[in-house]
Image (tube, rainbow, N blue to C red; front, side):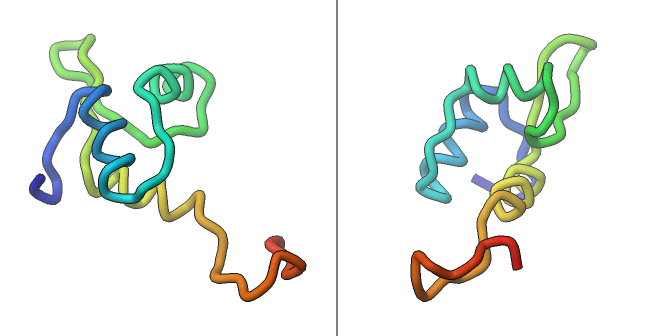
Length: 77
């Protein structure tokens, strides 16, 4: 998929799973669109949510911790 490509919700979840190897369900993206905390999206024709691949990449990166060398490393720093 091309960078900047717009994806429907199912495709966006699949993109996150395939590119990043992290679990992501389209239903999770739908819930996060209501409660907040998910990737930003646009609406086409006022109702169809579309996710930009660059935005999805930035969202996943924001959820990842820094590199750790041990499970005892603090993730808060």
